[in-house]
Image: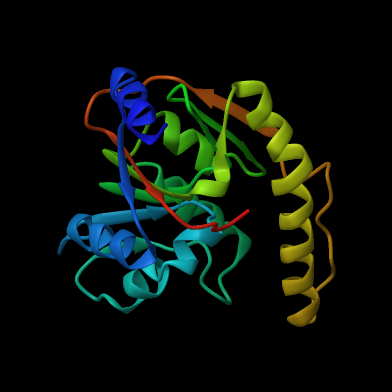
Length: 199
């Protein structure tokens, strides 16, 4: 199945790299995170789980548009999201990827799905095998039944922990949906990890 997926993504202009574990994925990430480049971020638990986010935050020789920095204003948050759309490298995850070489996603603000479509010079996506689906329909079903409920729980718990209100629900966490079945060759690289990661 994996070999067929690699061929299907290649046919659709996207590169799919299959790795055994988080460590291998992390080593691939380091090859792309070069000195003096600009990096944008899309919300991704997987990127955090494999250690890439911490690695980026420690580097002082890159330009990072980090909308997740604690203490910044809403205006600064939105500014960094926009700047990330024109970065040299955009690092994120995906809600689902199909065996036919397609990416299926949902987003709240829209910067993550927009960047996957157009903007950044290079898009690097990390995902676990639990995100593999057989069809677009199954991908959207996975988003609604798995990704949305788990992310609502995760984000609201984080807000409460930080003394804020739990404001996320089905109406505001995911209201922009995308399906991508092609990209400019060489722009999108997907690292598929043989572990269950993210939501």
